[in-house]
Length: 404
Ligand SMILES: CC(=O)SCCNC(=O)CCNC(=O)[C@H](O)C(C)(C)COP(=O)(O)OP(=O)(O)OC[C@H]1O[C@@H](n2cnc3c(N)ncnc32)[C@H](O)[C@@H]1OP(=O)(O)O
Image (cartoon, rainbow, N blue to C red; front, side, top):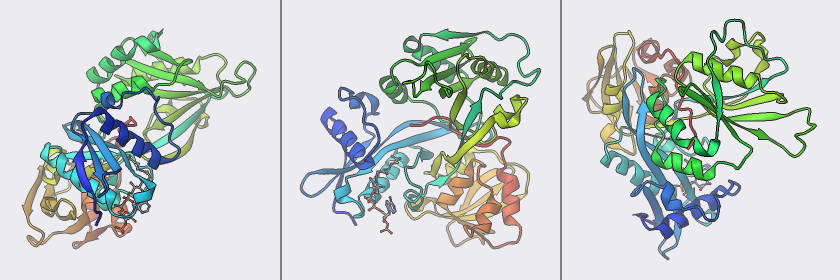
């Protein structure tokens, strides 16, 4: 166990120091500008520091509060955990474990149902009850082959360019007014917008807006030889649309850009309609797939009660949570909802799972039969995984859509 003291960091210099610890631990992550006011992009009271006996700040983590959309459309209180780091001189002594324990207990105190994060390494967070709940695809669109199918854009939805530096409030309004209904969507906090504003790369970058109902932000890559390049590439840094029609109009706008050969979409849901809009499906090439949301059910009874379920009768699942023992117990999950039915001993469960794997399956992204076949779900009654799959299935792949 680590000999550290965990404290809430409050002053501007403490917060700046925690940011320095994070960037030192990350080795190569580009640091924010020297004049960035770290306190302005941190939610008060949510940054925790670990101090060694000699008073040195050796580790830190923080989070912002918001909401996460669950299957069925309800939104539950959510903590977006980030800036996790321990100085390389103090790793593997339990510092992160002490920080994670403190942070999860704090989330419970705040009444947060779930927490999520993006992981720098896949081996870190499972032990703290986080599971991979959504995946993301990187897609490269070759404009030499990309053509919209006839009828993909009906009618003329106008797209206009706006000043990127003056558009922040407009973008924020569109995200807030037309939230995605997709499970896994997280709200963008005040701190998120401030950080995005402070850290967005300088020009050239562009924002195109479709009828105040959607936008796409993009910028060119490798501009040194842009004038004569045979491989001019832009990257889409953000895309938000109220309707599929607006989404298609924004993609159509990108396809019409002169000079550009390739459009990169670094993060798309696995079931994004983009390839299906095109005459040549292979013009949109998946260049990589990775984990997106690592989800932690902080309050298992509240999380299970908040989402909707498909048909499939009911199943009693025993959940084990080593870090937040109040979550451990048996839950009856059925088409009509879910409820806590007892402690770990009774009644006899149909299956048993660790809280991290329940988090992975919660949004419908990972199928229960995968978890069973991987040896992560213990079935006590035959066919339970298949029944759970029917109960937990969602129409669309879960996706958060934002980095933080
Ligand atoms: C949400 C985000 O911000 S993601 C960014 C996370 N930060 C980084 O990747 C920065 C670089 N890494 C670090 O700062 C640190 O290595 C951390 C934060 C990942 C881990 O901090 P530590 O204080 O070393 O973790 P701690 O000592 O509590 O480890 C607990 C257990 O996890 C294991 N563990 C922790 N990190 C790793 C890792 N990167 N690889 C393998 N095992 C790990 C430890 O071996 C230990 O296992 P044990 O309980 O079986 O002994």
